[in-house]
Figure 1: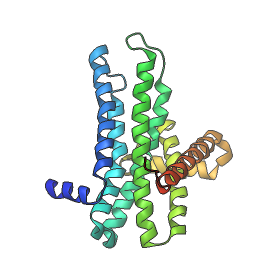
Figure 2 (figure 1 turned 45 degrees about the vertical axis):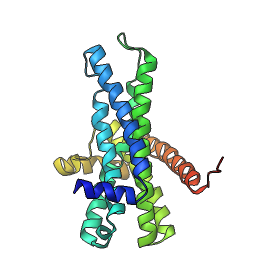
Figure 3 (figure 1 turned 30 degrees about the vertical axis):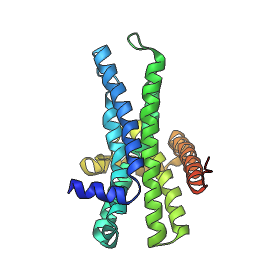
Figure 4 (figure 1 turned 180 degrees about the horizontal axis):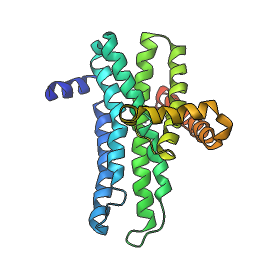
Amino acid sequence: MIANLVLQVKANMRFRLIILLGISMIFSVIMSIFRVWHTETLMYAFLVWNLFLAAIPYGISTLLILYPHLQKRAFIFWSLMVIWLLFLPNAPYIFTDLFHLRPRQDVPLWFDLLLLLSFAWNGLMLGYLSLLDIQEIIIKKISWRSSWILVIGVLLLSAFGVYLGRYLRWNSWDLFLNPLPLFQDIFDRFIHPFAHPRTWGVTFGYGTFLILGYLILRTLIQKPIAKI
């Protein structure tokens, strides 16, 4: 099974990309491990778990690309899409972990900044690359216009998910473990939008940031690179 998956990855021309992503993620994890060893504390160790959650959407989109027959099975495809959407906000969420940055005695500030930025970068790239995959699938299954509606909607929802996670401390699995309180919080913010200005400031602020970043990445990918 694993050998077949490796062959599928190589055949899909994303082997180099996955290797580079893997190296970048390992760099982040090594920095975290070194910090834990050096300080004998678990400060920032949670970033490893956050990065794992951020990698789930890319794993799902990669699975759909490598095994296109899954796209033809409606129940499997839409079930995977729901899971993908639930976990996607974990990718940009890591950027908000920069809130934890402050001078500490045992580690230089520059080290902690590099540590946080490396995890944030990897999380954002995993989210964007996953969204690129899903957009290509939607273009083929539905239409180009629908794919962009999906992109904008998903990025705004992801920004809203970042707010739910950072300020209300909800997690993706709370949709199954604590659905009623979660929906009550969401419902209240839609019914009384002016009572929650931070909700919509974060949602549209981060949403605009994510959309602009995705547009830049999409443009760079479509632009041919000149050979030296």
